[in-house]
Amino acid sequence: MHIPDDRTSRDGPQREHHLASLLVHVRPDRRDAVRAAASALSGVEIHAEQDGKMVVTVEGPSEGWIAERMTALHLTDGVLSAVMVFHHLETHPPETQTETDGFPVRP
Image (tube, rainbow, N blue to C red):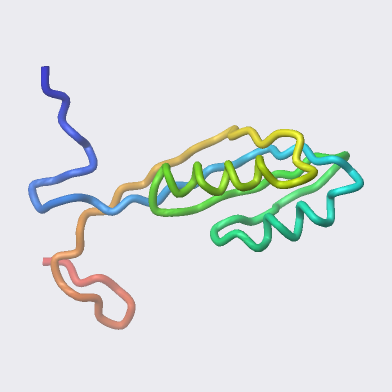
């Protein structure tokens, strides 16, 4: 049985944008180092911190890209766990013409 891939259209592959939120548990004595390491990762933003926990979002072009940053956070010295609590995917049709003034031109 063939299952169609929703990421393609008759015009070709669609662009994807992924957004994930993570709950990161950290050792209190390593909080500053973990914050610095997380802030250095592209697409990663810390939104809240309390009692050894950080709420972090990761945005990027693919699930693999998100997973790479989640793994990097998990492997950071002082991180006890990094758990995904939400994942959102948006697909956008491929652009058929070039952008004008920052806005895509649609046929």
